[in-house]
Image (cartoon, rainbow, N blue to C red; front, side, top):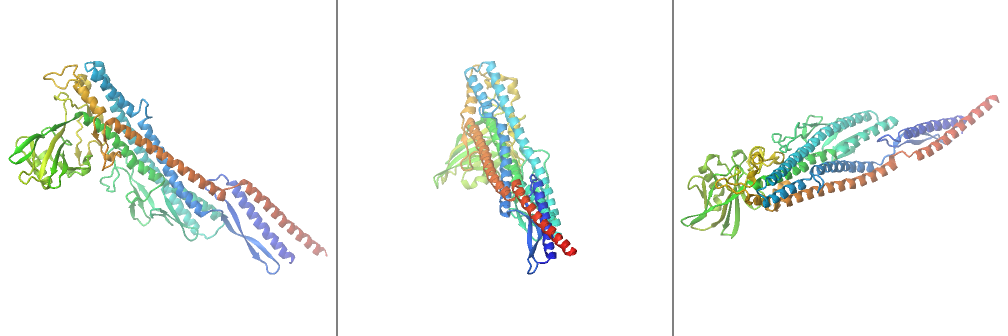
Length: 623
């Protein structure tokens, strides 16, 4: 080997060592930098013929396990989803109050039933009457306040979605920009490695917001898709748009139909101008965005419906009066006469009949609906899964009512007529005796405090009675918990808690109405809509109001605990993956110092060779 070859080898070694020292210095300096991946020089040998070889730096490697990185992003997205969901569930639990605490809904309701029970034994006591009304007002205000809180959480979710969309757009724009920079150069030097770190950091940010899949391409470029297959980024980034709502109410719902939607949706605008509603296509299934959407559109509305069911049960249980029909016989036909004069929109008629051809009993629920745009009614308009629901527009008079019923129920062989005034008559078929009418009744809302019966409009929907009305705009019970109030006329005259008629005047010590109120609040079996999430369409919840409240609180508590358990499980998985990732790609200062010592030794060896070559050259020159 010649002296010049030895000098070249030593010089190359010094250059490689110097570059390696710079890499180590960069690793140490970025030990605490988020998203920084440990770097190492890619050294390759250079052949120098028969006299040996040299070395050079071909690029900078990132010590990265791509499979582990992909798993970390998937589980990280799930952890973000679970964490935000658990946080919002915890906030919802605060709305209900700690079970047994003074401010808990169940406790406030118990105060009312206790006060009413005291009134049953002392109906003449003015102090007890005032206690009942005060407890009722506290309960109504509690339902009002809980509605405000639930809708406040929905509005926070709406704002959270707006912020998340803005963050996603920023991340996607940066990923596309870095893709372009990396694509412009195929080099693998330190600059490219830094750009790759930056891009990975933005991809990680995006994965916290939604579930994504990253596909590697040529020239260090990547394409980013949702797990459902929607492309978000390539050389150019798509744009997400979110039309946030300024207000959220119990009636605010998401719908794929823009004319029916009253909350924001996420629209993807591709670089070529195409659009896609990501929520309509269920394209985002994890991450913060999915958690916000689930809370805004499913969990919190369900919580609101449960509160509305309680409010509707409070109002309806005390004001609904059921009156059995009067037996009617016309020739061979038998059935019942029903007075429908007192029916208000949302009130109902119930008919039971037996089909003798199959020996099967059937039930029909006829609902007064004065908004033709709301017809026909769906079977879910009542909680009973076994009844046939018929909506009838009463605004055209009795002749129109009879015509509508005969048209809708003609196949049952039942016959409807109007013998006089506001009487609705339902009869069997008579001759062939295909059906027998077993029972018929009306359920109407009492709107006066002294109507001659124990029923009373104790609670109102703002200033109007709660009748369960159904219109094209929705159900009256929607948001009722936010509007329910104690009847101001009852507050002005507490004696009406006892006095239910004035001619003759109900005695001050009569416990008929107090007993009725207590029985309806504490023991009466009521039907609750399965749309509130308690019970199922096939087996709706039927029971007393206290039982429904306990079921609601238990369900919400179980859901919150389940959300917390999911969060803790996801945290364990992510922490484990993160530790493995850090072990492989993170900076270990001790290891870097050990590498530094090796490089110093190599640097010294190469320097010694150069010094020796210099001495030999000097010696040759002197000779």
